[in-house]
Amino acid sequence: ERKFFSGKNTELSKEAKKRQKLREIEKCVTLPLLLFDAENIVIAPFFTNQPNFITSKIVSGEVKFIKETEEDTELEGKIVLIESADPGYDWIFSHNIKGLITKFGGVNSHMSIRCAEFQIPSAIGCGSILFDELVSSHAVRLDCASSQLVKLR
Image (cartoon, rainbow, N blue to C red; front, side, top):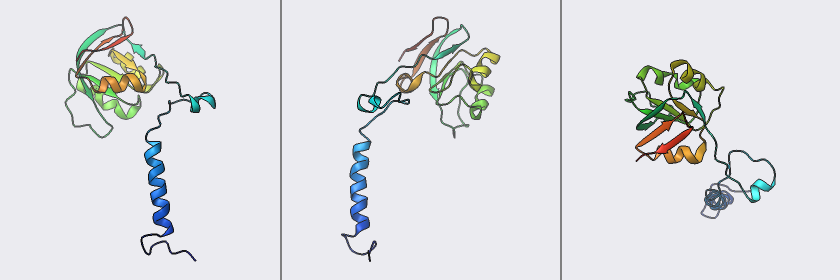
């Protein structure tokens, strides 16, 4: 019979400490979003995504990263950054945004279609590496004509 909840050296506390150590190790490991074969686990290649640029406009401006729960924020005239290109963010189009950049999504995603419809310059699906760099910036240039995203400050 095991006693899981009594004393300092119970089976449960030993297991918890063991798993806590494993979790600390796991935090140090970063894998790419897609694994193509078993070798990618040993040597994990990080591919930079080529975003899908919508329109041929060029805009520069202040960026605003928003999360799903942030509907109460000032977006007018800003280049908005969101992680996914799903319909849950449709509300941003009522704020007269200057541009849109997403971490995930493709040319046929909901946001690609909406941006084309409203003629909003956008870079859809720029990937984790570029997106995380842009989130930490204050302003970017979104050049859809030459397929470029440039961190300004």
